[in-house]
Amino acid sequence: MDYIDAPSPNFDARTAPPDMIVLHYTGMKTGEAALAQLRDPTPGGRVSSHYLVEEDGRVFRLVDEARRAWHAGVSSWKGQTDINSRSIGIEIVNPGHEFGYRDFPEPQVAAVIALVGDIRSRWTIADGDIVGHSDVAPARKPDPGERFPWKRLAAAGHGLWVEPPPAPGAPLAEGEEGAAVFAFQAGLTRLGYDCAPTGRFDAATREVVTAFQRHWVQSRIDGVADGLTRARLIALLRLAGG
Image (cartoon, rainbow, N blue to C red):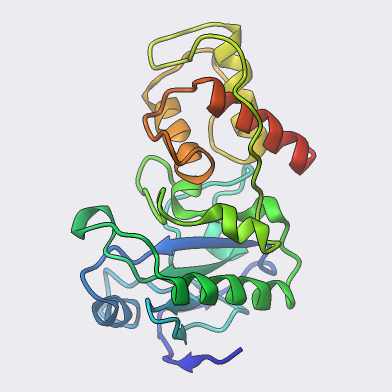
């Protein structure tokens, strides 16, 4: 596929080949501002990603895939915490929740799908390891958010998606305790989230559930594990072999 080279100085060496793709939105007012930020060499606030996808479908290549870009920050997935070392980061131009979150345009979505496919032709990346920034940093980040078409990406062969009927039982919410909470936390942990099972549905669990919903239950973003949320988690674990 066609790339526009826009090298960023903000990278270092990997410790292992990449086995994840992390999707972000830029969360800035314009794509031009985001591109400038990702290439800014000023010490103290340097960030970068491997790619940036504009709303019109243009794809900018900022950091070589063999290098470690600085996009994930403090994060965790499947027990690993240096997500930058093991991932390829894709920034998708969108103002985000702070500046007027909106749907991702068709040319942009098509470009993201093509880009993910191109990356996977070079690296071994499982469907369950194509995630959002909110998945690896639920307490800090909401992106790419509930408007990102994860279902369509999965339909193209990249990522996981399931739509089972809701599971029976009362919703689980912050403040509850017990075996059901423990089992749900254990399932989130098996999928990849940093959600060690304690049996207490605390604020950190609510943040993880909200992140899960932004990705897989986009009709409900409230951190409450209702029947639909629980059913999706169970089905995803079966699909991922977890």
